[in-house]
Image (tube, rainbow, N blue to C red):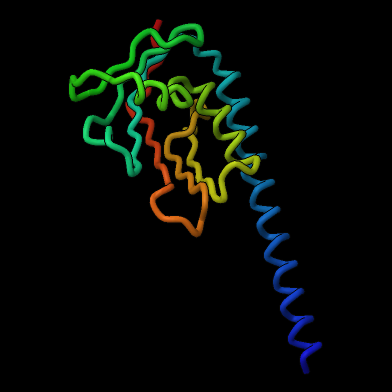
Length: 154
């Protein structure tokens, strides 16, 4: 009887590992397809609102309004009008362009986070809704990103 219970437990763990690996591969594949869609759109100048929700001090000032040209941030400001302090600006750098956001998602889906859930823009492929849970068993480590009001500029 003990051997049967042990065998069932090992089989359950193996199936869970396979499902987790398949999910990670699916996330990587979906990410790559949408990143390619973004690159194919060839948008070099754009503006968007980025709402970051986390257990952070700056969330009351969200969203950020970010303008990017040729891969560089032209402007970044809180919609509230409050000034962005240096510490927060450093934190925002990993999300300050669509390309940087894709880089961060590559890291997170590649193992830096336990769970990453993304909804992509159907037209351009950029992430519109992102949930990142770095440690499933931990509390207050999750981050949610929402990109809205995306606008290609001339």
